[in-house]
Image 1: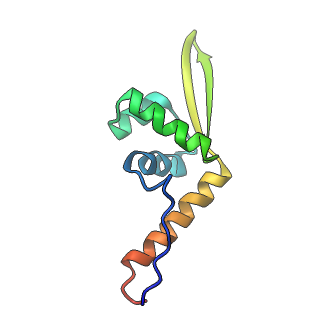
Image 2: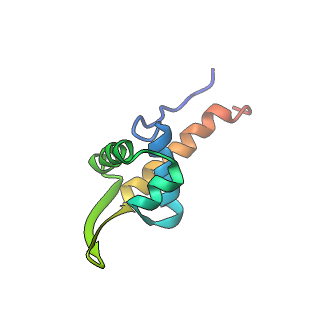
Length: 98
């Protein structure tokens, strides 16, 4: 019988997985850029970012830039590791050789 690995429930959400995919390559991104790239509503994205933050996968920094509020999300080492593990575990579902 094939050994299927458990998928991280934090990352097993389309929007959270999309955010993490973006941050894996960009390292950090502004809230507005994440909203545009994912097509999410501001409210939904905010909730999902908080879940990633609570899991220790990202850091959220609120600051001002040219007198406008700016929210920047950065991936943390724990988030990088969780994403890599997620991809490896997902591979067990699509690897037909095992």
